[in-house]
Image 1 (cartoon, one colour):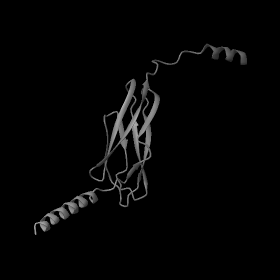
Image 2 (tube, rainbow, N blue to C red):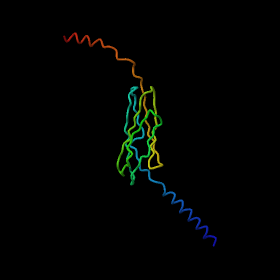
Image 3 (cartoon, rainbow, N blue to C red):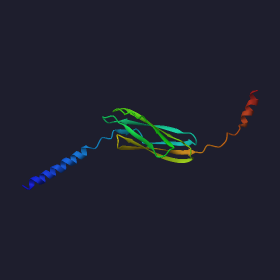
Image 4 (cartoon, rainbow, N blue to C red):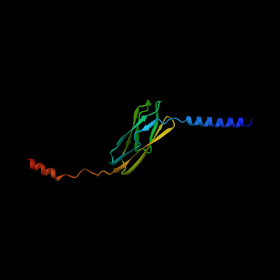
Length: 146
């Protein structure tokens, strides 16, 4: 008789453990790439890169928020749901105002509570101050053609 309650408790444990395993939702957002290196870019010239995402799930995918780690990085994305099997783009811009290396993170929040991360990096080189020096050869060439 004591075996029956023990058996019921054991079965209930397996049932609830199995139900918890099935409650995790599928990860439907797939990124074609998670990182982009701009390489060397000139100071004062904003740069942009498009990250492509794919909805591999069976339900529409909703990007709730795309947020950069600082104000120098600006993500742009469509707020419309992404249909199953469809692709979308997150355009990430970087304002190359400060000289030196940069490494910025972008957080994608989707389907209410899931997250993925993107990263951009590169090196900003300081543009020379003032205009380019005069080229003496230009005057020489003008004299030769007259």
